[in-house]
Length: 404
Image 1 (cartoon, rainbow, N blue to C red):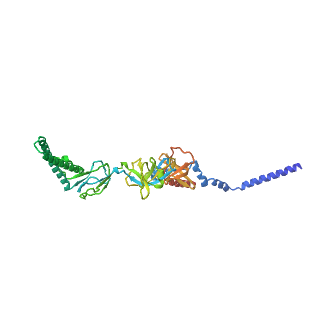
Image 2 (image 1 turned 135 degrees about the horizontal axis):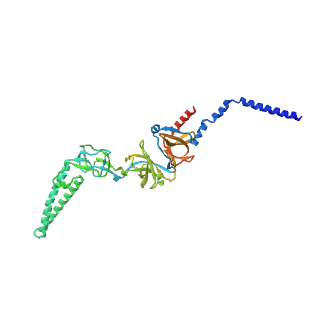
Image 3 (image 1 turned 45 degrees about the vertical axis):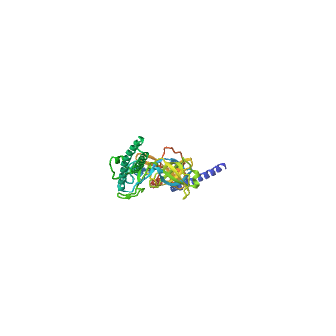
């Protein structure tokens, strides 16, 4: 009985073994392939972003064609800022309107708009019979004054010697002083016309007078033409010294309590290729404009190498906090699904290698976005500062080609 029992167990074991072999023999290779395909789904491929294994390579020619900008990640104040608009201005002492103090005709214009001029440089010449008349009036008064001075000195000696009466002496003195005042007055007028009285005293009559710039700067406007008659105090030319151009921003009443001198202002002029400039508030107006009700805030520009012309409209942000964070331009960040990436950049020979690095987003000021890296990044790491969308699209294109 014992032997039979063992035989039954053996039969059951052999039957189960046979069934297992049959099952293995009937398994399909396509099932194994299907499991392998699952491991290569796009979802698994996306995980490579975290490992930094995906990349896109660009030739130097492609790099230049895209006008890619490369730089390290910037540390910016993103936590607290106040938007403010305005325009570029210069202090009143750095603007000059050139006029004539006498009615005359423009006989020559020596500058054009945009010319740089020095203080005292001739910008135009005027001529008119009235100018010649001023000179002859001066010469007549000058020569008459010389005669009356001689007569006054003669009467003084006679009076002191007891020969002449005091009345004659007083009359001579009065006439001499009136003539002297006339000469000095005419000399002052001629000085305003830039006419040398020393030359006149030597017999020189000047046919034309010069207009000179009272400040150094650039000619902003020429409002006259050659041959044109101009009245006294008519604006003929305008000169502006742009060395002292500054940002003039308007801050509304509700935000006045947030601003103070010394705060940093970041702004752009409204031009297609305008770069962001930095300025520091040095003065805050103490009176409100009526329409709109706002204060003028003046900020000194740190870098004035760009073309800055008074009157240019500017759009800026006043930093009212002091917390800084890492940030990228909006065009340096690409979105893929619910994730965001920036691209590290590395030069390899004549080519460029770009690798996506995942980040989370923070504050957004319209052009810059605060970021936080999910992996450690060296401060010296270079990143693409623009065209991240194209880099992501190019990487996707290369992935699709490799899968096929």
